[in-house]
Image 1: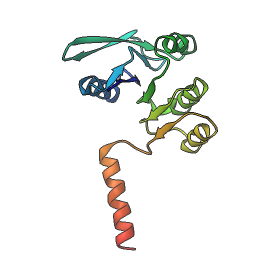
Image 2: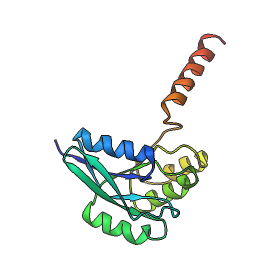
Image 3: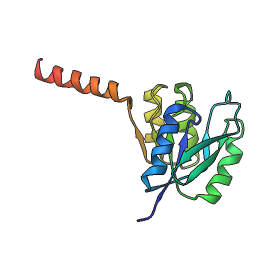
Image 4: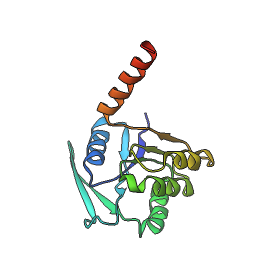
Length: 152
């Protein structure tokens, strides 16, 4: 089975670290050694520990991502971006993914969800946009939907 290249964006954030570490352990994925991050992040890289040792990922701030994405795409012509960045970056990141033809999973909650959907619908790329990926909130939403349907 061919491994799927993925780029986890949002490092060095906790959720992105957990997703990246689990993706490495899964064995079905190739983790691209770059991660989009916020302008306020001072670190240039993030190190993750896996069973075979450590992997170092270069953090790419918004002010250099336009130049860097072409280098990344030269090395990895196809990959899926997985976004666990900051709510304030949701729409700008989606526009970036669409502009560069990058299929993505938006795991970050927030932003203008209507505009996010419109950006993707007007493009040729595939995206998964979860309304909320926090397990407690998803459980609560399911419980409320069940209650509303069962007890109108």
